[in-house]
Length: 360
Length: 128
Image 1 (cartoon, each protein chain N blue to C red):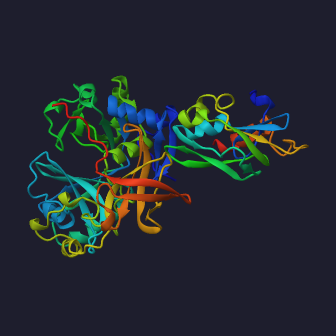
Image 2 (cartoon, rainbow over the protein chains, first blue to last red):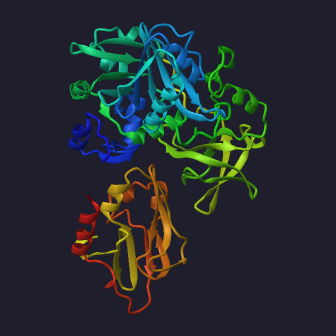
Image 3 (cartoon, chains in turn orange, yellow):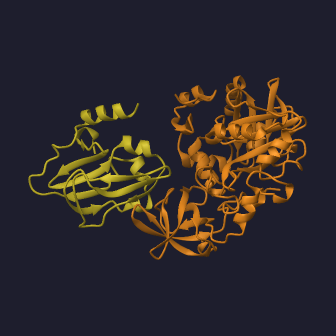
């Protein structure tokens, strides 16, 4: 029996198409992927992301435990800051990509739905004698992402916190309708926006409120096309237990100088190995989509594999991401993609494919 | 085309036979399931198609699906407008969104295909 978010009934009532995603019944689309995608780029859309894992850390050794499993440096974070990083295995492969939140008295972490159980047990395994309590708050809370150039404007006045003063990748505890809530300036679409974390029983009022303000519900389908345009990796596709952060182009989220952490030694070793495949962006000449698992060829030789592919509604291009042998990773390299037995021309292009226009 | 007079394949193609030429399209149910159609690959003129075999594919943002021929024969016309505007297949699946016309052998019928009633029963069981 799949899990349901507190907004399940709202999704059904709107006629959303539901799919099983990481053990959750989630809306893939309400109207059309392209329409929802376009709304987020042009105005604002909201995503029920309550399936994502929300963990809280309490106790004097919270930072020690996070530092031990997190590739980025949590020690330099200031109160209210949010930081992206990886949880690596001992071999330097990626167990998950996560966000760490620094509060005045503790920390929180948001992890992928598909990795929630794995990360909870990983933390337990590495806790040792440290005085830290990790609580999985996923089922007691809900999370809504409001994304798009009009997101802040449409959310103004919903919470007492001054959301306009909230910096990118910053969060603040506040209240929604008098009850505790967290608002962060984060997201997974390449647009400006906010993410709300509320108690499970506040999810429906928050959803209805956002709807009344003109924020359009969007499903996982648009979330995927949006994140691909923004070249954000998705766990299980661009990042896996076998891929290390350097291959994935995430070296900015690895801080070996911060001190030891799980996977650090292996990562420094792997960095010396020039044969590892690298993540690239690919633009196809035609309209057929190269989906996960499609082979990337140079002549008749396989040189890599596609991890995600789509038609990009904003750019009106057929795009893919994948891993190729380093000799073929330079921008401009011509290659072919084997799509269901037929080759299609493609070339390596810079990532991200899409960058939002800066307004200020 | 009037959906009542068409015959249907389990794989969601419709067929209409007139004077030895079979027009083939996709049902409204199928295009509604696909949404976000971005590309349709169709055969060339004179290509042979065969009953139950793929003659092309339809690409949507989410997935690609094969198009299966409901008859045996040779392609005598291809709806070229779909190359520039594949969304026609969603907007007007029984009209401007037709896919191909196939010349069939003398004596060919569509009796092996489903009637509208039978097809509707099938999709009722799929659309849970």
